[in-house]
Amino acid sequence: MKFIGLILKSARRSKRRTLLTVISVAIAVFLFAALRAVLDGFNAGAEGSSSTRIVTQRSTSLIFSMPTSHAEQIRNTPGVQDLTWASWFGGIYKDPRNFFAQFAIEPESYLRIYPEILLTPDERKAFLDDRTGCIVGDGLAKVYGFKIGDKITLKVGIPTYGRQDFDFNVRGIYRSGGGSVDNQSMWFHWKYADERSVVKGQAGWYVMQIANPDHAAQVSAAIDQKFANSPYETKTETERAFQSSFVSMFGNLNLLLGSIGIAVVITTLFVAGNTMAMSVRERTTEIAVMRTLGFPSSTIFLLIAGEGLMMAILGGVVGAGLARAIVNPEFLNAGTFIPAVGVNGANMITGLGLSVLIGLLAGLIPATMASRLKIVDALRRAA
Amino acid sequence: MALIDLRDVTKSYRRDQIEIPVLDGVTITVDGGDFLGLMGPSGSGKSTLLNLLAGIDRPTRGSIRIGEVEISRLSERALAGWRARHIGFIFQLYNLIPVLTAFENVELPLLLTSLSKKQRRDHVMTALGIVDLGDREKHYPRQLSGGQEQRVAIARAIVTDPTLLLADEPTGDLDAKSAGEVLTLLQRLNQEFKKTIVMVTHDPHAAERAARLLHLEKGTLVEQVKVGA
Image 1 (cartoon, rainbow over the protein chains, first blue to last red):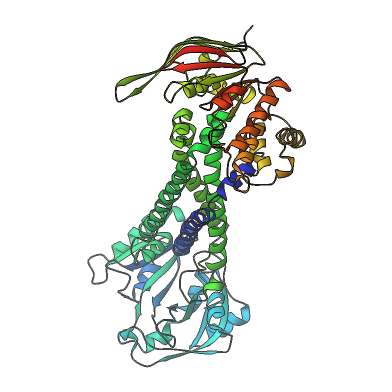
Image 2 (tube, rainbow over the protein chains, first blue to last red; image 1 turned 180 degrees about the horizontal axis):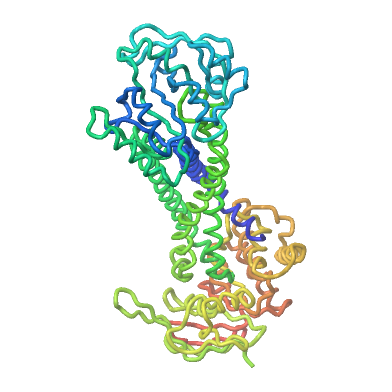
């Protein structure tokens, strides 16, 4: 404890340099925590997916649809308990920048298979009874101020749905009861979209409830077998794999964002390490004097390493705190279909852990340099 | 028994494969309470001898015993501990830590002891009182004159009540008045507090204050002069 004052005094020797080092670590931790939060947001669907749901899509790509006539054949597959389907709508709310996910769903079966979509009985009934009704997530409602009874007009974004705008009545504000359902989406009747579709009776994907999660692979294979060598070959996989493939449409985000995070951290590590090394070089005489006074090498090592660690932790606390304050859905206030992008406690702890690692590694070489300093040589240089 | 007993001490450095001899078979004994002056031209090995006595350098050959301890055989860690307990070092350029106040500079060696904060404060204020700078405890080195800085450095050297005070040209960077004050202080520490002092100096006036003088030339002891003889 008695050396902490000494560490603090040393860190305040060059306030500007210390401040810049703290800021560089803070930026690194901020970016790392924010990128982790974005990745977590993208992966939330896969993480929270159900083991008793499997998804069938076109084998070529999710962007191609399949006939709804597949439904009966799939439903008859042994192991399948229930079935629903959905399509990506891709409408535009006022401006293309107001991007959020809209799905055309077969409402009764969809709400049955996804009990995580939480609605009051009244909202549920109102939605099911209104062909042009829709439900929106509470996160989305907060961003755009949607209320029950509001009318939402979406311009058509994908030509297959014709040219005429779609008007919807908000019949419910749903809450998410699990990671597989985000609270930033809009769901409406598939029939309403189908009526105006250029090609009728098309579904983007099917979701099946299966009896036994252990049989997912066999059931999936059996479904795909039914459509093999047809114009609409399918690919059936677990909901988790489907969610992951949905995310992979944006590219390998884990690799991309992970690489950016690591690059930032490594750069900061070198910056902090170089700063500490400069600081030690400037203090060569002082360190030699302290050694002459009887400070052992190990204490010198701890003083220098402690200084680096203290600056890094300070930067880490600032960076993680800022990330928590800035990177949250309320503050960002932007529509998105990544569910609830926000820096959570785990992201903050990871960021703080990273700052400790930066501090330890950045201080390692300078502290070793300082502790191995030859007293006589250092004093001679100063004379 | 002598406090310092150097026997046949040789020191040489290697520079680019060339062996440079600095001390060649020096034998010295110093009694406790002595005030020894070391004189000699530049490169004669005075500072090297002082560094060897301080345990911050090691002899190539020979033995250095201080008190009961053969310091040339101590490990680095043990030597650091020994320095903390037994050596007070006064540098020519004071070498105070600029970001620490006078009080904190003097307190520095005491951080290595198990003294409480209050005990450390008492020790520091006593040491600053001896060098007559009790009222400058909160001043930073840049707020002190050269003479005052050197007196703070002396307070730092005596605060642990070391066995041996080593001074490397303590007046080399001071004006005549400040140099006189510092030398008077060292004399007082020797006579009043019975401190054993070894002082390296170029300055004949400074050398006059020592009770005993040794002259080094090209690494060998060429003359022993008794002051006042």
